[in-house]
Amino acid sequence: MDPCASTPQPVSFPAADGYRLNGFAWQHPGPGRERPVVVINPATSVRCRYYARFAAFLHAHGFDVLCYDYRGIGESRPRSLRGFEAGWIDWGRLDFEAALQFALCRFPGQPMQVVAHSVGGFLIGLAASSHRVLRVFTMGAQYAHWRDYHRAGRLRLLLKWHVVMPALTAVLGYFPGRRLGWLEDTPRGVVRDWTAPYPRFEDNWRRGALVLPQAELDELVERFAAVHGATLALSLSDDEFGTVDAVQRLLRYYRNSARTHLHLRPENIGQAQVGHFAFFHSRFEHSLWPLALEWLRYGRLPAQPRGEIFTLPPGTPAPPQPVRQVA
Image (cartoon, rainbow, N blue to C red; front, side, top):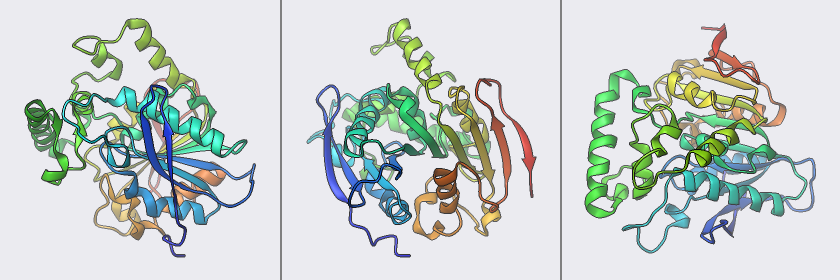
């Protein structure tokens, strides 16, 4: 199979506040009410183009796919980022919400699914229409609480992302990630959210210049409970961001979803390393991508690869316990 065989169509749609978002759609001709449509939520400051091969893979297996950039990133970047205000809450309750609404209109009646990378899995719960999502697959999904970073690299990550990044952002009005080779240029609000200190995400918006009223914070937390679609969360043992603690911290917010967490070591698939980003490289088309494909198609795990599996039934907010471990 050639994952580059399908040609995406550029798409553009407005968020509720009028900000125009841009991305790409891989769409089959003709109606298909039984054909799922997958919305891909990127990681923080990763362009939607990065996911094009994976989107084409899903399209080749019978899905319609929408991938887009959040405001301030890639195709949705304004002329200047200096002083541009956008944060994770904007990306979730405005941008992902707009992507859902666009997909619901463009693909009427089709089952709605989401593939989310890193913070993209957090943003799902902030959207008012996330209850329309029937199935979710996430890779390394978390919201960057620093205590969850892999212990061996925690100090280095703290210096890079929690000292250097906010310092440069304070001087320039945005983070110049592209010039440094550290992801894309990033709005200052996203940097603020990334470096927030509290383990519960809602506590990070209780003070400061962009404080949110308590009622609004409560409503945002409750939106996570509105997600009922079954979720498969994948994590890799060499992912410094998406550790088991980080992934499960986020999963606990989706308390009304049937959640399955699969934790793999790279050697489970015959690789030396995978990390936080490489899942979406086409070299994993035959080893890791079938995990997402099987889940999105049937809501189940394939027989291979084998790893550590945690389950959290709907209505269970407590930390998940492993129910099966296979070496």
